[in-house]
Length: 162
Image (cartoon, rainbow, N blue to C red; front, side, top):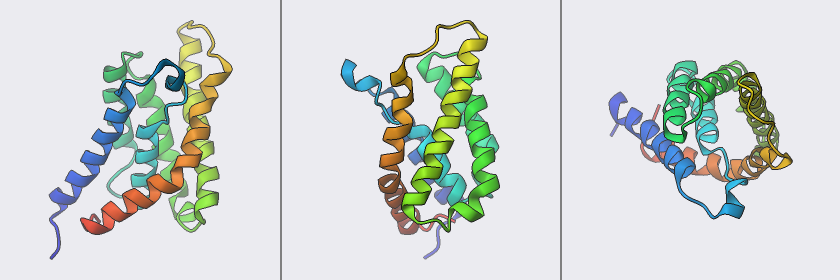
């Protein structure tokens, strides 16, 4: 039984919505600085797995939604996620061949780029520079990547998203 493309799109949209929900979910004060960049991890996975369906436009849209949800400068996350989607699209054929530990290092670089772009935007609008803990979420995301990859891959296979 094959699923229609719209049903496969439903799985992609639901995983992105879950990632956005995890982003705004309240955490204790001590854990807020270590919150993974769920939205970026999910965007990277779908751009690697289905680059013809998830790309720069989806990254930009997710970023705009994230800006509205978090109350940040409109376009801040849109710019960084569109850039991450573009870089991931450019590298997707190579990165898919890497073992998970090398993919984790690549994901770390992408997460750091996203943080750098966000920090650049914050500096452009004269916000104070962040503390050193600002760089903790990319490290957490790097360690979570193998599990995110395996869970999303299994979902993609179970629902035959292509």
